[in-house]
Length: 288
Image (tube, rainbow, N blue to C red; front, top):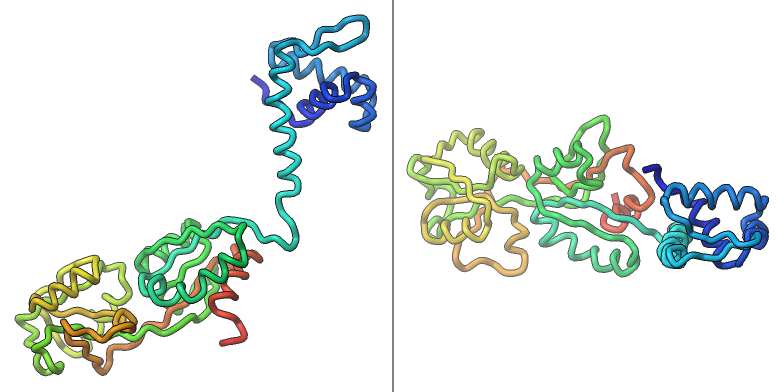
């Protein structure tokens, strides 16, 4: 079946509402013959008479009256869609992916204000690891990634957001780096797509530390419980302890474990005004 056209529905509704072809032609700013031809096309497409013809008059059939109620909704919806976007009313769906630390400690400072100021913008916010975010951005599954950086790529742009300090987390009986016996120590880290894991593994290699094993555990709460019970050690973003100093584990700042700068990253061809509004809210350009 050939698809219905909006113009056909508009003409049909005009005839129903104006009561005649001549009146509908004036409303639609076209000749009466065009109105008649479009109605015939519509009836042929539907396989149904919408009007009875009687001495030059069009009398809506029961089927035509029912179809009018459906067609009117479509025409009204199309009219509202024509005015869907207003110059001063941002609208759209932003797909944003972020590191857990950005979700927990950074975005809560800015998201409420942005959402209050832009009620017609839908935010789809999800948590992923660093390298997953980069892949999703490359695959155009995200508009913006808040991830470790900087990222150098000809198709991407980025802006610095904040720096995340990394710390070594150990059982309470470990008072310094010298207390760790690496050949018998288990290291608990997130999956290999985590930037912090890569940073900590690089640091261990630079220091010549070879642990007994590296276990993959995708939960800071579970890792912390294991460290507390003496199962092993880990590497955490320092901001996890920002609200309260830990009393169940030892947090050690160690030399050589470089901090992780966090950036907003987006595709160059995806840098639309709505996305820039969000970026400028969470990391104003004039601040850097």
